[in-house]
Image (cartoon, rainbow, N blue to C red; front, side, top):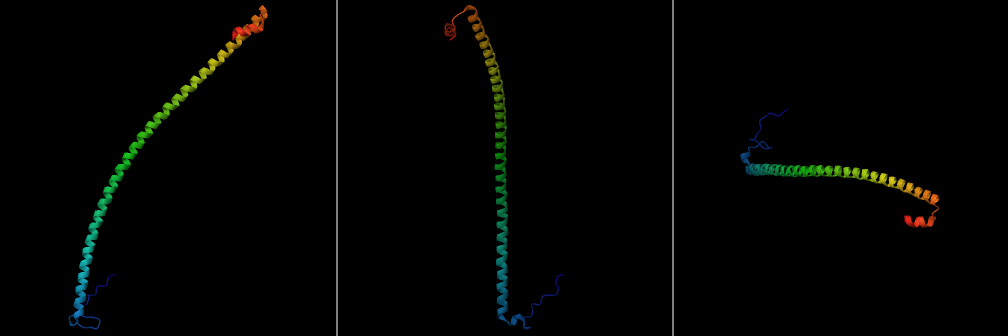
Length: 139
């Protein structure tokens, strides 16, 4: 609750009229001047706050734009890297298939080589060819 008693400006601490004291009017003048200075300071501070808010908003907008640009760039980079990764996976898969085919071909050639060696051995046994001479001819 507020105190609604009227402010008494007609008396001082001693019950005297302020007009009887010249220092009282000087004190009031000083207080009024101080109030004026404080009001001016307050206005200047309010203007500075407005300027700071505007500056902050501008910086925030610039930062947001920069972040959006960076995000778009990162998104594009991520997409490109994903495509490249998928291409490399496909290439690895193709190379694995190619390697498997080469292994199959090697195994098949090894079988054929073994068959040919067996045929050479069989022919040497049937025809009584000297082994040394046959080996020289195969190499």
